[in-house]
Length: 397
Image (tube, rainbow, N blue to C red; front, side, top):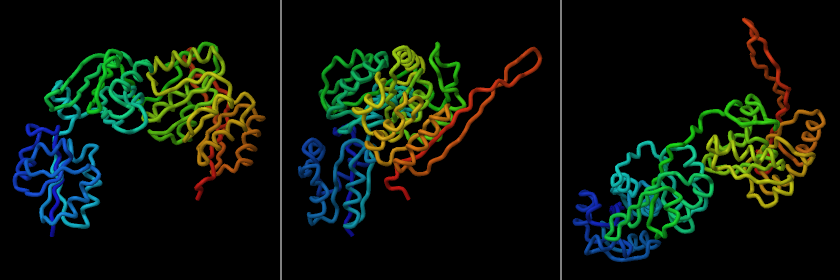
């Protein structure tokens, strides 16, 4: 049976190869690698990264080694290479030194509690990750280079986050910089770069937001009991794109943001006073993955990205149009609507039925809170609220 060895080459230098990897390379006559990694092994044959598996299979050697950068289990191509080679023989993986291990050792920071994200050749951001974690390690590349990521952090209000930038790690031109996100954003940086972001002001995404945490003034606010049930009913996933229509003070918005910590929440609000409070509460409770959209719905929704789920706390009499736009952008969108008036309840029921929503549920929630009066506790009732939920019928089973 043929044997294929996929070897993690660490930082691409002999000094960062493990002893085991170096031994395997010395004992294997047929080695394939990209031009950068081929320098590690005199007998290595240079081929394009995309052709590694094909070259290994088409050669007549019984034992073949393939070099990949970093560690085989850390955002590596090793997994896909293994799948391609398995039908041709036995595949063995040899771990290497990852860029995270290398950088953290260089700057003296442990990584066992770090949030790990890759934006190398990918869309997205790390606003939520940094908002809700003390340490975030990021692989950069493409449009999401290190400077651009730091710039986006600064623009979102995270400019004081401490940053370690590692560029060309292990190479002669290695560069490690330390500064705030605002400072590092001013540097130009190549594509072989990683970031370690330290946010000592991070917020606990698992902590529910209580009413007293929010600045409210005279703007209506969804009470915590209704908020918690509504957000749970919406079933927000970490990477979701969420709309909060009629965001008000941001009470629901910030709950949603904690659930969608790897996604984004678009808070749509038309009242300037409420927008000001939303900005304040976003800063106060660390929801930097919230994007505030000032304007009237449904017009303000037209240019937003397709939502995975939508919460409607205020419709301004445009409930059907709001739901319809969400459904047009995502035919399987999940929605939760809060209604206080019976007329809003009926309008929403009709809209969900006419637009073909499935799994529609309606709950009336009445909550009362205890208030001390002398040596007695009196229960003070909040207004009852109807919570409606459903999902678009696409792919409904």
